[in-house]
Amino acid sequence: MNYGFIGFGNLATAIYQGLKNEDNLRFAYFDQIRKNVELPFLQLEELTAFADVIFLTVKPQNLTEVLQQLQPLPRDGKVVVSPVAGKSIAFIENYLGKVQPIVRIMPNLAIAYKKSVTAFATHHPNNERVNEIYRVLTKLGKVVEVDENDFDLFTSVFGSGPAFILAFLNVFRDKIREFNLPDAEIDELLVQLTEGTLSYFSENRSRCSIEELIRNVTSKGGTTEAGLNYYYEHHIDQLIEGVLEAAKNRSIEMSKNELN
Image (tube, rainbow, N blue to C red; front, side, top):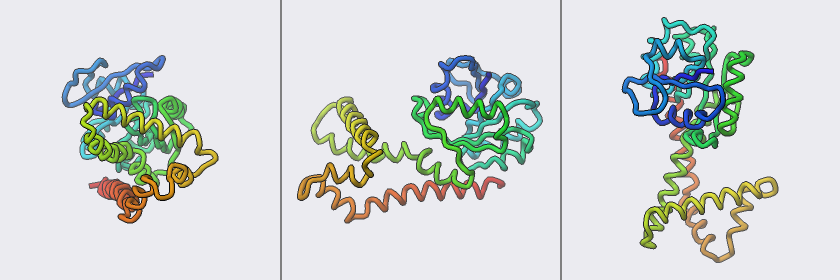
């Protein structure tokens, strides 16, 4: 099967990295600027003819222009996949028609390492190629079939989530610098802390809630309790929830403006 990327930025690169070693997949891309990458560059008309699956990996503000360019090109038998935030299947159908099989996904950059959590929605659930795309995506992490009405929340947590978690880790990183360790060693320690915490959660999640796991680390009158008291007294949990809410609201705003 041939996969074609329209736009080859960070997300397209991550999807390609996750898929490039899969059997029987061939790749090409089109972008306004030719990239120094290993897969072939094709003009848009050539890419559309080449691809069985067309990925719309462009920024939301550029999607309308791309769809207008795709509109007159032959697309029989092809599937269009869109990870564009805030842009619904109906929006794409306005340009490509309801007969066109369209898949809306929302992965994150961990898809490059086969660790993504990816939302999946389509109006063509019985299309063979649509189902094949679903199967391929399951090789790149966890795939969740999500109603399109829930994409805004999903995007805020799982699409944007890695950036928020890294921002939190960056606070740890700045604090660890007080040890005067080399940055590379600090990063290694942060990776170990994160991996260890995730292993602790993963190994115990079937029998313990997150709250119980936190209590297991917390001694009365100890350092962890002091830090957690500050965390809750200053409503940091609510601030983090506000971060997710702001991301969700921006996705909703983009959806409302999608016909403009």
